[in-house]
Every structure is written in structure tokens, then in C-alpha cells.
Length: 334
Ligand code: PEP
Ligand code: MN
Image 1: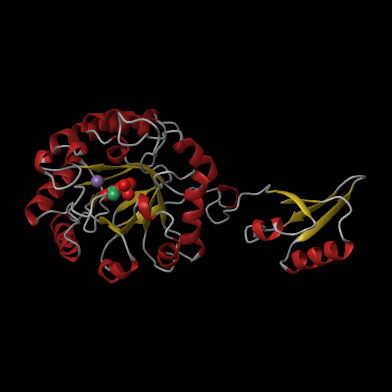
Image 2 (image 1 turned 45 degrees about the vertical axis):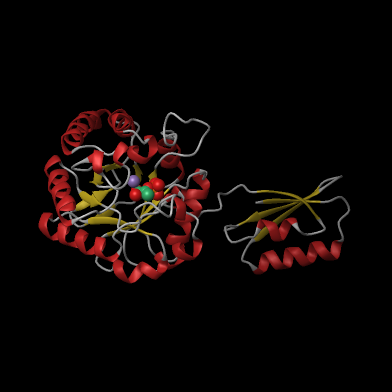
């Protein structure tokens, strides 16, 4: 980080600032030019509050050289993180597909879909028990009952389960859940992220509706900084001016994140496009671009689904997507 000081700064205040920064364990290189003074900060600046510096009378501007995320940064952790869930591995060249209904609706529905996605080669079962719906009048999920059904489906199929938490008050219900999903709408629920950072359980963190990749990594940083190293990122499309698709799938997030972080990167072509027929091409493209896996919505009866039927694949369509995606993997960019 470089701090540019205003012309003729109050020397006492400069000394005071340097003392404070040294107290934070940083080394300070001063460079005094004819018109300006620069302070170069050497060391871990991730905990230096830029707003605190900006508010100082003697400070003209600040330039960050190092990214504000340290734990998620590939620079400090060059090896890919591999998250292991049950028998499944995500990251480090292991391709993992999570599939299942948008929401858990009934025992029958869930167990039918679970058996079908397992048969087609999925490694984990998804299903929402707590649903973040735009309308308060829409189906909100079976809540605790939904989690019980997921555990039953896990017992029946052996597939680890992934389900979304919407509020920390629900956390006690997630004890036997294999992967806790933080949805797009909660990506910046920092209190929740901090608490999930204290767990020893994989967290699937979805990109916010209008979040930059740096913001996504700062959210991952909350979990990692708490001691939980098992974070899986998920690109699920972002809000743009386009209306032909539910969101705009940012496939460039895959190579961009790959360079920025060591964390595994999944792609959710279902929420990204909102249309079942677009899931296959986007799943194949994500695999080709080097994603570590996919999250796909599958329903035994999409036309009558209680949530996201339009983007849900039938088991047969899912099986076709699995085969098409597998065929791409040998040629994927890594
Ligand atoms: C989901 O995966 O069920 C979901 C609600 O996705 P998102 O948070 O990406 O909208
Ligand atoms: Mn959904």
C-alpha cells in the first residue's frame, strides 16, 4: 500500500501516523519528493482500514498494491484447495456435480430425483429446505421438515447433501448437513459468514446478484479468517440489463477467479439462465472454461415444480447434460 501525503504536511501528524502503522507491524518506507511525500507500507496490509487513512487531514490519496483478501489469495496459497465431502472431491482437477430439485417438496419427489441424479453420475444432492423467494406469497420451503427429508435421501442414496441456510437461527438444524449453501442474497450477510467461519464444515458460497469477484472473495475471506478453510465458490450469473435470461452467466469469472484464488469454483447454469434448454450449452461451456464442477436443478416433474420449474431439467435431460459435460472435460482449460 502506498500513501500519498498532501503538500507540506504537518510533520507531527506524519510522525504520529508512521508510529501507528509501525505499531501494526508494518515497515514504512518514506520518499520525500519536491512536491509530495510518499509512505510505502511493507507487510500484511489486509487489516489496514483505508477509510481510516482517507479521513486523515495529511493524506492526499492511497493506492493498494496488494489485494485486501489474504486467506483466499492464490499468491499466499498457490496450491488449489480441494474440499472433500463424503467420497466426493471438489477442486484440484476433480470435477464434481451437485444436482437436485430447487426445493424439497415431498419424500417421493426428493427420493425419486436423488436416485435419478445419482444414477446419472452426480456426486452430491441439492435441495432447498429454506427458500429465498422474491414473493412472500410463494412457497417458502418445508424448512426443518425439508432437512429431515434430505437426510433420508442421503441415507437412501449415500449422496452427501447441500442445502441453503437463510438465517443463523436455523443453524442448529444443519448439524448433519454435509455442505451449507450461502445463497446469492446472503453473500454479504457478514454476521452469518463469521459464524460459518467457526464451523468445520464445507460452505458453498454463491456470488451475489450484483457482486464483483473481489467482493465474492472478501466474503469467502470472512469464512476463511474464522478458521474454516473449506469454502467452495459458485458463479450463478449476475444482474445485467438483459431480460432474455434470468441472469447473465459470467463465464469469465472462472479464469479470473482461478488466477485470484485457490478455492474451487462451481458454476450454476440453472439460476444463471433460468431456462432448462440453456442449461446444457452453459454447463458444457463452464466445463470447457475450467470450472471445478456444476450445480444443476433437476425435477421429476418440472411443469408442476413448486419453485424454478422453468429452469429444471428432467432426469433424462440431466443424464444427457452429464454425458455431454464429461466429454468436454479432457479438453478443458486448466
Ligand atoms: C438456490 O441455489 O437454490 C438459489 C436460491 O440460488 P441463488 O442463491 O444463486 O439465487
Ligand atoms: Mn432454484
